[in-house]
Image 1 (cartoon, rainbow, N blue to C red):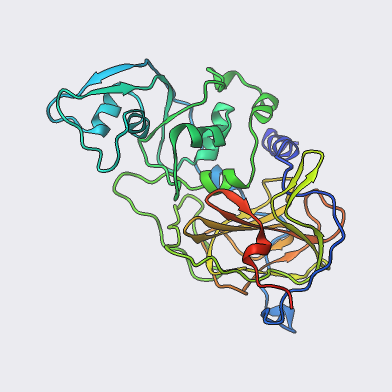
Image 2: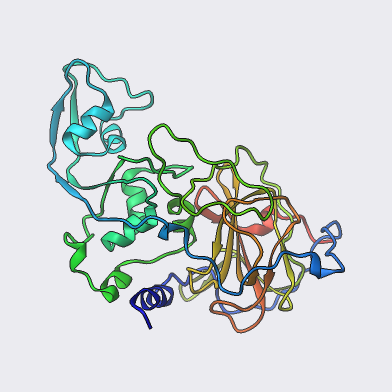
Length: 353
């Protein structure tokens, strides 16, 4: 087995395991107004059994971190926040947050700005947050929180990201096994860290039409607004509901038992943010961004019928259910997320008839 394949295998085994838990035994049926399945399944899109390469593999990351000392900077005539960031090596968003600055970030000559020390990575074109975290053996979630990143979570070329203090100072010295042990990947990481960085002055690409591929190094525009109304993605038996199950086990969504090959339908209009199998616990996984911070997740798919960047409509088939990932029977793991947090799907789905 090559080192690349071995690396992926190790990462999948060490992936976060929250969100899929042992089945329960409640039954439900989707409401009667659920869109009807086609009688001829040959009209459905077909895709290879193996998921496509991960989005964040499009542009390799070369660690270039620079150590910045904590201190104070006195604003000079003509200074801009970005210019100060370039001069000091600190991130402009970090400087703004440390000094209570808000957009449009007005500063004045003589103003004293606190500079937050630490190691900063300068983002290169096409790099993704996940790839940056992996290069340093760090947690991307920590990077998001340290830097106060917000939706749409699109990095910019030249942006400086503060790295966690726990990140190794010499990432090149880490073995594949050590990198895997220091790096984890979950749905939130993909939502916040899978978009390639945009060059200065560039804009995100508009989503594609149905089943039309978009280059993996293209940054996709986020949908504008969404009302938060969803449909059931499948009709089946509830194996496990949302919330705590005791013993430290938590389900971030619903696990719905359905026969293998059952069409999975988009729960609402949106844009495919991810389609792949990089999180071992979920197997085949699709994430749809609906805008306004709403995201839905569909796990354990046997086939993935969509690719990243595609526009989908509520009720359209996006994949076929299976038992990929860490499960022992065919099912769909379904989540609804708002602002990075999983919410109870039962609150947002139509009531049972």
